[in-house]
Image 1 (tube, rainbow, N blue to C red):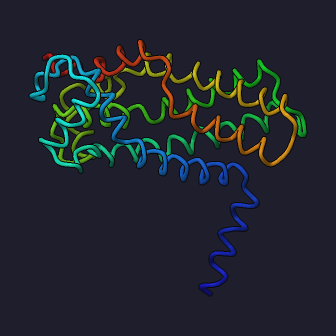
Image 2: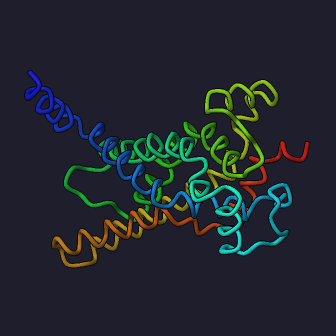
Length: 239
């Protein structure tokens, strides 16, 4: 029976491409989150509007801030907020890829490559869908990483925010988040699909395009919108 169970699970994935996309996306999200959580933490604290609350210099550089975190919170402090990050990223990336697969199956003819406009629209819609679903966890993740809030867990954080700020607090920063993530997703899906079509077909080409797409997901080139996004989610610090 134990040998049949894995085979049965593989059959389920093989027969449900949307679920397969969700699982693959969730796994890639888990790996990238664990690897790059320290950089995400440093980015959030650099954009924190009240760095003095952390005991850090008013305008710390990236390496100075890393040293400060290691000194005050030890090496594990660089991975602070890992739980909310995984809670957001694992289902969030899974939702993005499964939504994208579903949208392609519904609006793109089988066997046809994505046209430029289709790539942009599908990327924007898929990221918007996952972003709206995961915004409460995004708020908690940002506050965890800020070093200001001391929530005991995700559930207690949800209760505390809802009690003091209501639903509005759980959705704080949704608009700038969508303005940052949705166009970016549309652009990198556009570049990925068009680059893959332009280059000669082959394993190395496909691997290279896939790497470009995955790396692009980790880059947030809209830094001005990030500077708006984090203060919005941490706005309670001013109250």
